[in-house]
Image 1 (tube, helix red, strand yellow):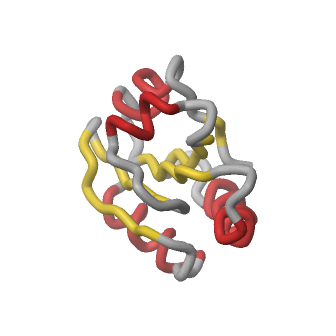
Image 2 (cartoon, rainbow, N blue to C red; image 1 turned 60 degrees about the vertical axis):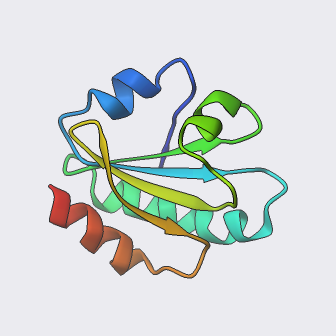
Length: 106
């Protein structure tokens, strides 16, 4: 199951993480976000201990959404050592593609 990242825990969970991190910016009202949600959860389970996977609700974490220029969702960011290394906009991505990107950063 994916973690929940917020304005409060983003620094410790994502920026300061020793593991690569996938962050899914999403919203409750976003249809494509709901489609990709189960895939994000599967990646979180499959790569437990190798990478962190979590979600940011854009309606609840407006500061984070602004900081990373989230214009459309789902918006996926890949972090390593506190820096954004890659991004995917939209829901047209497979579980294997997400896993491969995270494993390349591990």
